[in-house]
Image (cartoon, rainbow, N blue to C red):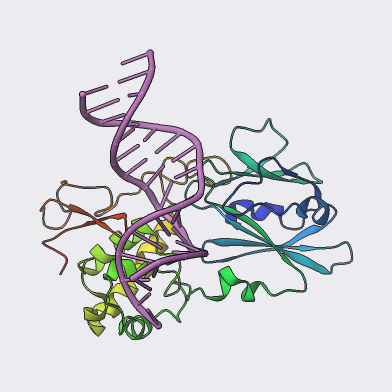
Length: 268
DNA sequence: AACGAGACCTGGCAGC
DNA sequence: TGCTGCCAGGTCTCGT
């Protein structure tokens, strides 16, 4: 979202939908709705980017919801360029800038919420848990939410209805930093460990944001440069390598069909 | 209500 | 070189 912030205030000249097939079809009404409107505000909720548009009179027209899924990438181009294979969607602006959405795996989404409807009430947004970096996300809150959950703690903190923003990498990293075993049933995590976990989730995400995002193959910042310098992980992707704390080999298991990494010596 | 599995996709890589 | 199988950062939907 920060990468495309320079576009705020710009007027849309054209929308191109090359391949409407994302997680849901890109609404074709954008072709008529967006041109001549102005991008008035960019915000974010969970992993959804919310782009608000005004008409020439400054009246709110609606909000574009963008999600990058697993492989999505937003490119901010200074001028039009030949589109590549998985370039699904463009917004061209009057000053020449182009916002381009590329998503090989098509798990991303482009949705439209009309101006007379509430984004907060949108089915994808309404049921989301708190933002992890907000003060409302506390150890108390987490502890209360876990009372009736028997699923593993790692599964629980990745549930966006409980708290948003904790993806597969940062779930493993946060649990290591809090010294919590990912297999622990959620309702067996003590109050004190909940406090610690919340504080480590906040610290993990804050430092990742500071470093600029995740340095994985197909993630790039809006300027086309890799999201960051290689971030060093405590456990993620370090199967059989020595724990940075105790030198025991890092374990890899499957939870909910996703890989989990942890140190069996350090995490209880 | 909560859980687990399945679903959606392409591309990169290891192993044969 | 080419094939096969496995793996990947997300999250909704469905059956139990």
